[in-house]
Length: 434
Ligand code: URA
Image (cartoon, rainbow, N blue to C red; front, side):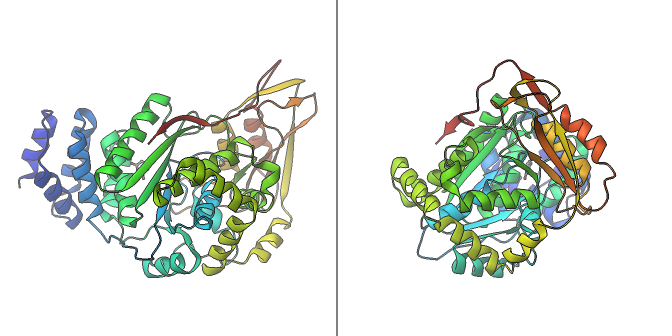
């Protein structure tokens, strides 16, 4: 294989053969193909695209660059992947809920980079929680607790790690085949037989338009099916933060509150979305209708089984929820913002809220940055709520002194639009791809 000829072929817009893709990715992973040639091919793919077959070959080659897990637990396995959002603590509810309905949930997750937070960072605010399990321990926790959430190790898809680092600095992130190869190779290597995708669109999402999100969702579902998995996707709205908490510890606290008191919130759009995702996972994994799956999910959320699964996972990964409750009462600096006029909340800009939380220390700019577990924003209002001048809109919090709170508050205030009328958000689902 001559790398330059493959780059030429793709630059000219021709489809690459399966062996060409496989050998190129193998050569790159082993360090035989230099970064500059991989970057050139990534740019050619960005500009010329790939067919479904080429994307499937790229995904498979990347998946095979590392370890691929297998599950023989006697029950089906399922996982949900989100493209990332603001206040997106949904995995903390969806995964234990699906486990409570009788599927095993192996979930390799990520740390946050930039404005959207990572599930692993959130879980790590629980004192003792180990979100860096070895793959062997990950398998043990799934077998024991039915669900595990931990960061992916270096043994899974090393080709993606190397390629993503290059894409990040060569303007080649925004390419559907490369995104599909990256996301799907990791999920396929994780080994779950059912994969459900939450592809978010909007101001607070990686995909800014509905059209791009739908295209990515379709490509992820067809790629997963081509690889022999059951798959579905929901394209969901990420213009408004999900729920009330945006940060890390506060998001875990909100998820726990939902798991403990589901009857109060089951109709809320974000909670209904959790039920819908778990229902999709179990209807595909257990081969039951979506209506049967929804009924089972509602029952297991309302009777505390999902909470029990979450607690079992936390315990199995070394976490201590009593210490977490103490952390929530630890002193910190706070700042409240209030409505400047009367009216109805018609929009809460997810990106501006995320920026404010980020400024407080809830996110990281570089992978090596540390986050402040207590930093974040808690919303007092939702879209559709009436307010009068001086009504509380949100609270900003951080560890230590108050430095930075006022400037983050100024940013946060710009996130709220107050109009004369607005409807509450009833559903976050834009499109279903099954
Ligand atoms: N997330 C990933 O894991 N990979 C991409 O390419 C984009 C988003």
